[in-house]
Length: 251
Ligand code: SF4
Image 1 (cartoon, rainbow, N blue to C red):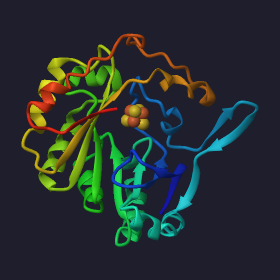
Image 2: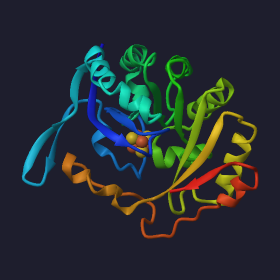
Image 3: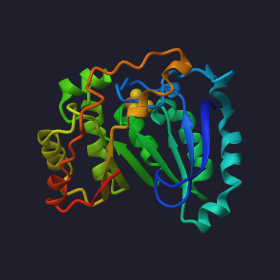
């Protein structure tokens, strides 16, 4: 199968265990108001203006071609206890292509995805079966607010989180902390109640909102216009998670 890849970054240290190569797949069904990768939203290649130059963002690749490229660094991954992480956009949007690549590289390389978890259950299960590790985002536990700020329901996401918790696959839960959107005690308590008892949860990472999120929008002809107050201080409430015995990292 062919897929659309918009970046391959080497030596990543925040995308899973060890030193990793991160592969960015194009397309995302969500529209989070804090998204800092607007070039990953459209599933199609598109022009991107960078200073004086214009370049194509997104390149069609055969699964074999991408697998060969990643297998080249197999020894480096092994020595550094690292591997490959697929992100986006939303990598589950190209699930068929992703599975083909994973099936070719996984016998040799540790494989992870970073995902919003927004996909059909059968799609999520199939991809999960080809993975060693998952970085799973949880943007809001309240469905109404999730719809307001990401334009999709969180129901499929919470269902897939349940599947992940029951799978035994090691995972990290990531929460982007957005001021006055999801950085409330109520959201953190609900999240704690959902996640308590998941023995395969390695830790929760709380990622503070970064004002540079809007930097690339004009490069792809979009406007960055979040409805929340980007200047407000972000609350963290890590104590709620720590008191439940959960390992928390604030980034
Ligand atoms: S899920 Fe990720 S890539 Fe998609 S809109 Fe949200 S932040 Fe952006």
